[in-house]
Image 1 (tube, helix red, strand yellow):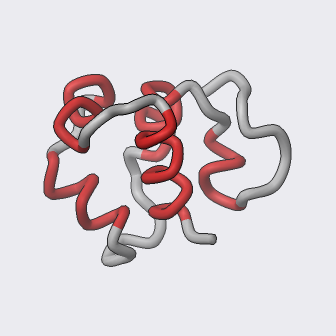
Image 2 (cartoon, helix red, strand yellow; image 1 turned 135 degrees about the horizontal axis):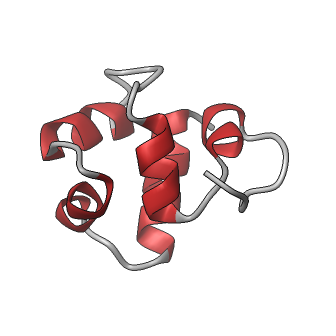
Length: 71
């Protein structure tokens, strides 16, 4: 599983569209789309995305450790 797939899975689990995530994380929709599709492998916005999704940045990046945590 990739960073993008973990972001998409987390986003869908709370019922958010990409637009809703961009509003909460303060990033562009094109950035979210590129990350989810794998065009961007290590997003600099990782912490803000994790905070918006209420998941651990480490889990988003690696898939290891607890899914939830302080971002």
